[in-house]
Image 1 (cartoon, rainbow, N blue to C red):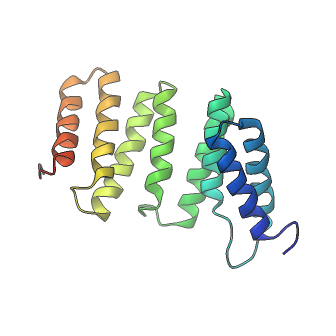
Image 2 (tube, rainbow, N blue to C red):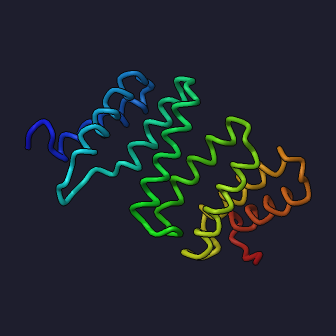
Length: 171
């Protein structure tokens, strides 16, 4: 225990995430940054999931309208996850999805599509095709393709998503 323990860092992260949910964004940023500050000093057996905390911090900055800081933190979250796990590990999928959503919301449709496609490749290599995450990724890629005016590819992706959500195999 103590002010620099992993438990204190995790408590700050939990408080920050709760404040984020109730839209107390400045306070959320404070607690998430504290979690990161303490977490960066940890060498204990149960370290803080810094990738997840950076992702939450990125979302808080996105909601605050600080897109530059949000972008920095989303990429930092991905960097940490890639360092922690193998290049194509399923644990990367939520982080990639969060980054893809951010890039889509900031109208970087080609970059968003590439991130979603990477997540989809990992997803397809790790689970059964008929999985809701797979369908969501097809939908997200389809939405990017719509914005990029590739209507036929968008439709093909959206039809795959519909088939998965309807529990039909379309491979």
